[in-house]
Length: 146
Image 1 (cartoon, rainbow, N blue to C red):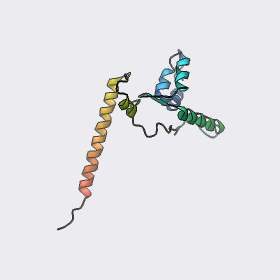
Image 2: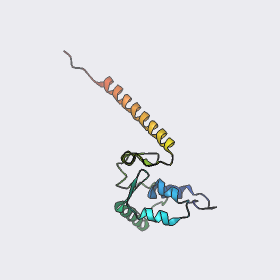
Image 3: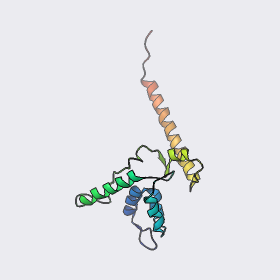
Image 4: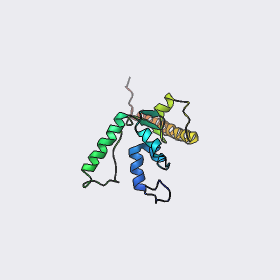
């Protein structure tokens, strides 16, 4: 994937690893200390960057086994379409699990400025959506005649 030294970057491999291992773990692949990564993947962790436990490990293992069985019929680097059940209802801005960050507000973010910008962008989009919905609702409402 181009994570180590002078190996060429492979965007397809990076995309798959980021999706399957989470952006946080994929970012750690540049670190030659594989023990730390293995420790994280074998631990139960919930922090703003990483939600990982026995269920996510099991889901990853099952997904990889299914892919290995059907590898002749599928493109390994195509659309993955796989989401961990522990992640599916989480609001993620940038690479931050917002619910977890709200529960752990003293957790030091690696790039707090980027998170704030992502949060402001999200809030602006939501405000615009709400405003548009209200306008559409007012335009289609009928008032009862008296």
